Amino acid sequence: MQQFVIDTQELKVAVDIVVISEQGDDRYILLIKRKYEPFAGQYAIPGGFVNNDEELETAALRELQEETGVEAVTNLEQIATFGKVNRDPRKRVISIVYLAIINELPELLPAPGADNDTTDAVWIRLEDVQYPLAFDHDEIVKKALEKYSQIRN
Image (cartoon, rainbow, N blue to C red):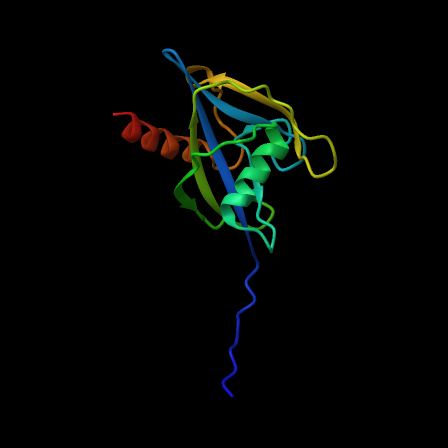
């Protein structure tokens, strides 16, 4: 019988979700404010770690709902993978990034409780976003806006 050896990697898999809402001529992005270090008090895009028994898209929808209260997003599109070695100071994290474009500004109600690592969720006009965002989220937003432009042109 053949035995398989699996190397024990020290990494985590995460999902990040860029949500853009179109309101007439204005475009808004959904951001959360981080509760904990690293980057406590800084804005970031919604996201978090994938559970061991969870599909990637399911994890993205769960994180979005927990951190912002936004539900029923049906048009998630996987747009990129980010995996630079030091993108997260806690551990090696590889993130699968999703984009969702919606036509409303739903009310934001982050879920209370220990699982929620945000202090606030906000809609901010794209032109008004204050950079830098937490982690490498500036790069993620840039990539998402490139994809958004391709979709809308």
